[in-house]
Image 1: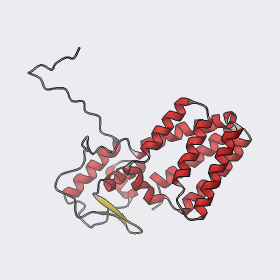
Image 2: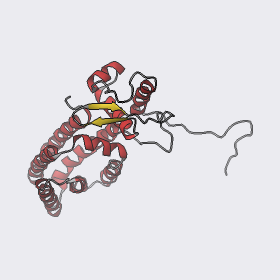
Image 3: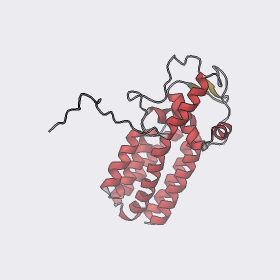
Image 4: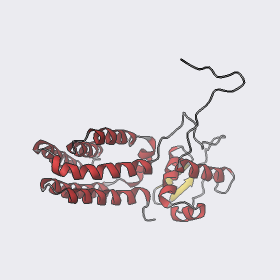
Length: 243
């Protein structure tokens, strides 16, 4: 039976805790609106800014991605990050329910790393012949796209989902699919524009060829190690690149 709120008390509103990237973005937006960082002025480099604010560089970068996605800053290729001129009158951070960007890219990436490394190890011993063939075919399609200088994004996702299915663990499959759906969000789109290119695609092809060898050899330890090394490399590109 529904319980009515007493007239002397307002209806309870559940408030989620602020995510780390939101807290950092809120601080930077406050500095921008206070005039510490002004329109069309380049922000300090990520390493310097992280030290000045007192946060890790990956956490800072995630906040900058959120600020750029929200339209407060912009990246000028080869020239750094600048405050935009058309900020609007009201602060954007903290995010409203309607503007919620969801769990941060770093948080999602960490979850994928944990799950997909474990899935790769299981897939090495559980994948069927048909599943290994499907993975090889997917890799061949990715290779053709990269050679044509075309983004292999769809085949990239397909490869990861084929691999997690080859682990034959329904919980892994469902959860990793949820994370890949979240990866289509606005913050990920902003991040991908910064780091994905033909060189990064080629590095991904090398990793997948090595992973396929481990799967064919049914070497779970090697498959896990390769997947972990892949996530380490990609994570550095996404969240802690060299300036």
